[in-house]
Image 1 (cartoon, rainbow, N blue to C red):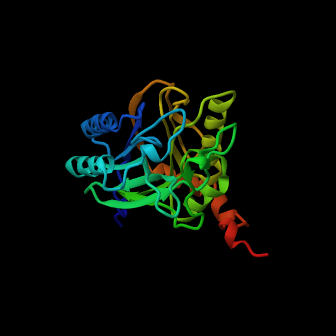
Image 2: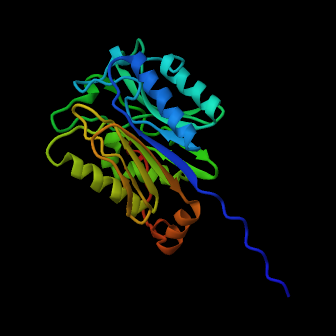
Length: 281
């Protein structure tokens, strides 16, 4: 009796991490974007991840003056380069407000390898902490909005943004939507213990969700950089310093699934996560 052949092994998904130093010069940031895509395409990446505020950044605060619509120059270039290279992308941008609320919105856009804009996530937890007041300039996204999950080659990438990393419910909600990998574009503010918090929180979110974490920080003045990739077992496989850098890693879906089989903490959980407004009295 012949043995049944093993099913074909799904190849790893290749992710390029672009720890760039964006500025308030929107045109210059498009040049940086194009270079990041060129490097991702050169190594045959499947996904390119850029930080929060990749379209425009000011360490003194990002607001309406830095905003562009989703059909503006940055997202248009993002979509054009994705279509030209076949590389999907996740990037943080700032979009304008409206007559009802003129504050801008902090948004992560997801573009697939055809250049289609497949979804957006508006940052829910604004950085009103450690002496900062992000909500003075930006409006939060709705807590009950569907999570943003991008499917690339059978691996599902779920999105958080920067300060969201401090709220484990945000990560768990994305995992409940099917994410295998938590992607965290950030411009993590520098300061006492902040780099340690960034690393510790990224590792914790990986372990408690048995999910890989791809945390991509902004480089430059006032932010820590220090992008890292954490496996679902909590092992840090890549960690950058505070300088601009573009690096690429492979995520193996078989290994991701194996960790969840060995440590079925998601199956063993006894509590659900719901937005605050939906809690029963």
